Image (tube, rainbow over all chains, first blue to last red):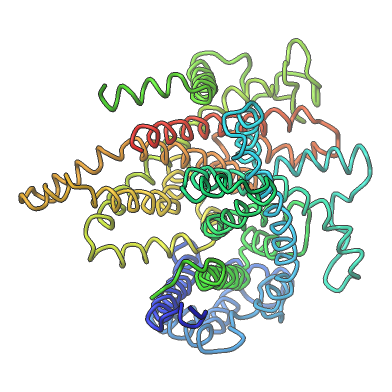
Length: 331
Length: 277
């Protein structure tokens, strides 16, 4: 069967509609959450304005800011403006940042996005590769001593908070051994070598803390797979051990991809905290700083871009599945 | 032998279950003891500042002279509370929705799309944003964590309900006109061990989420969970002063407690699959 035949039009339509529903839900939620919160968005902004320009009166500034941001409009009109600006404008317009005036919030977030993607992609490729090899090895040694001791250790690393791991690594590598920097020494537009040098420790930490998860998933998938008739047949053929192992690896890739994308949201949370801990100029730092400083436009833009990344990667995972597994077809 | 008996005997011979049970039991015992006895007041200044571990202060003291051993004992209370309560909340939403989706074919698609919204949205950033506006208490933090993490429970319950629905005895029950509620109760009882296992795993998730929130300073900070102590260590620059004793025990405790939960969940799931399959 050719690849094109494996996707029915119905399936693709269903996936895309599902994705659109999640997208709309995300857009609505991002509008609703800040407005459910207590307090007026304008107050904080106005007090900041007055601190810088003492000659403006409070009431006048409040009125002007409310008019500027449309806060005195009925909530339905606000929603209409929001939808027009976010869904029907490209790039989406969330207004300018309260913290960095005149800088559109979406630009702040988009500048940060490449650093986050770099951290996620590099660390996950390494962690996933390691997870496949360790997981298959452990599955082949099920119930032997090496497996019995590794599983609790894997669970321990898996359930250790990633920021604590980072603190310990900083203590050892930066403060005791003086090998790697504890705070990332680069910003937007630094040279690639500086960036790689600064990224080394964050990447190592994310790899250490995500390898156990990949390993455990692949281990249990391989254990299930080892029970199947297919493996008995392979063994009966007298295949070399390395050949068998390659077949196991190929078959364990699929469940791990599904699981990976299901846990992507959790992973992104950990990565955001690591970024903010190292002051790495990525999405995490931007969102956490903005949340602590009540910088609403940047919070909204950050949540929006994060949701888009997650929605698109989930869609990609769904559509890639039949390419990786010839048995699967979506009719 | 009855199914429950064989599961129990499988569990009691499982090394992982014993280790996990011992770990969780130890911390639960510590939480109970800390209600009645603490060596020092965990928040008051009771010793020298920045003191490394010593006989009078086994875990050392903080920058303001608070006894870290007392804080460690006291911190087990909120950590365990949020672990159990958030798992309870996520079960409260996840089990009915999963059962409905697995049992009624018509409800499957809309309910799972609804669950997808929660799965695909970036939970932790959302949690951070919500928590900065509304300073949560232990109860509201667990509710937020539970509400944002129920889809995991719903998905697993749904897929096991789907596979059990294929079995002949359920088909017979449907044909003989047994009320739907009754059949769903039967399915629920049948997959109860699996539900317990997932609940334990979501307790692990609750511990970690609470630690993340506390560490960022947006959690229920007055309850002094272990993550809060790490937050104060970070804001007092304990790392750069070299006060490792302020950082090491708390993170490792979170890891060990969560590992204990995971091992119990893992062995319950294994026992269930061993008995059923």
